[in-house]
Length: 634
View 1 (cartoon, rainbow, N blue to C red):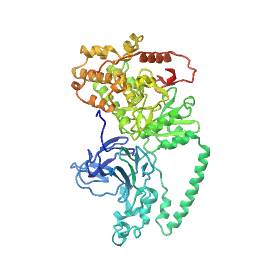
View 2 (view 1 turned 90 degrees about the vertical axis):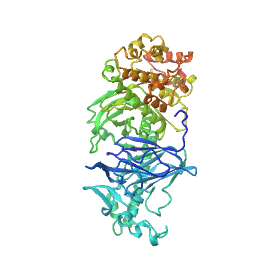
View 3 (view 1 turned 180 degrees about the vertical axis):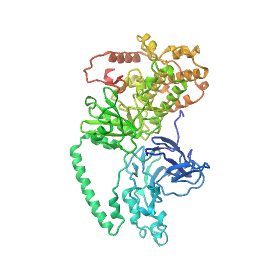
View 4 (view 1 turned 90 degrees about the horizontal axis):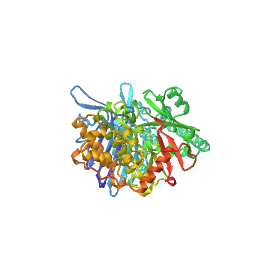
């Protein structure tokens, strides 16, 4: 874990469908840790694919157990009667993704529709080149599938068979005298797939534009039902599958191309550079401002206000009617749109049970909005305030700490692009109906390459009390994912009451005591863990939880970044035994840190900020000070 050295690639499989998907993993060479599992809507799972792995990934839908306990699925069933799919594999009429990992020094992948289609799929590599870029079949082919190839669940089409699997004729399967590229041409049926998904493999003698090759250090995100799934009008395919359809289709294609070119020119005239940046960085559904008004019932239900803007409650305009939180950015907070693009780009790449899901955005002139999933229990800060902390049991607090750690570990290591949040605090940790924590508010986040360890920042960023020393002063090193580790440690200490208000107010004149509390070490040495929680009476098991969280928090807030554990190690420490944890060394403070904290205190006490070197922000949900400070200021 500490070395961080491994071979192979990380495959993150995420489900953005409106239904549960049961992924299947089948291996011809090497093995993954699982052959099948469950992904509920919005969930993701990262798998380590070893070097020389060769296999496929597909998704099953509409699965259930019968009265005898046998597991089966309407599409993609692997006939194992279980969620896992061990043993031999029977080909299904579904969308497949093939991978070869570290084969001859490179990786390769392709999306296959040779057997059929059931779900839209997209593959996003962590690195890009002329031969390695995002691809997929993102069209809902179930709607345009010929009736004689549709697979139904009642009256609803749920999959589309290939012509070979549906008819088993030599012409459609390229068998017998068709065994050559020259003789086996794409039929009207295979062109259904070929034209809708030109970068997918559709029939045995398909062209060579469907295989993508990447470096062997590339990681991948495989998304079922990516956010933007275009619709294809069925009338085009009526021509496509009828007599004389090719001629009519040619006319349609010409007209479509002309329309697209004209619209592209008009769009370029109207859009500014920020708009172009958004389109390049984000693959999410884009809503009009009129849709935003309808979603929020004309902005009738306010969830919170702040310097960035106002958050409203609403519902998605689709049949699901799912509740959402919709953030409207203030005119004064928009600037050049950098924070807006940051948040969209970061969250659109992140899909994890401990990351707030992003459903879409609005960018229409001066009107900008971000649409999230609604979190009914609000933010973590209300659960760890002086009035609320005694009402939440310690096991729940511990599970919240573990969940946040897993979310950060995903952002730092498993996301398609490494993301450093730079503003971890209780107000940015939201709680769903089951008190599952989800990291939110990526306005200050930084995207970086997976092999980057040090991040270049033009200005300091974060919230007073949670900012890592190196973020506001380069004397402590460079900003990195370890900066989030520091902020996380401060949150954990606050969760157990180690930074309660009375202690902080008493020691306000001594910054070292407030932020690196010597008294925590003294209590741990005297085995007086109960003092950490404000003298509340706790049980033995609860005391172990508090002590573990205290030790992990202290390791995370070490002054020098290299002394802090990475988030993978933090998760391991939290989930491991208390006996394996040692009391960390007391952080060594020097004049640079004291000066920097005094500077932050001066900023906090300043009532009027007129210089361009300092930009004050307010958190939407609470109004807590969040600062972006020029390094020249410190």
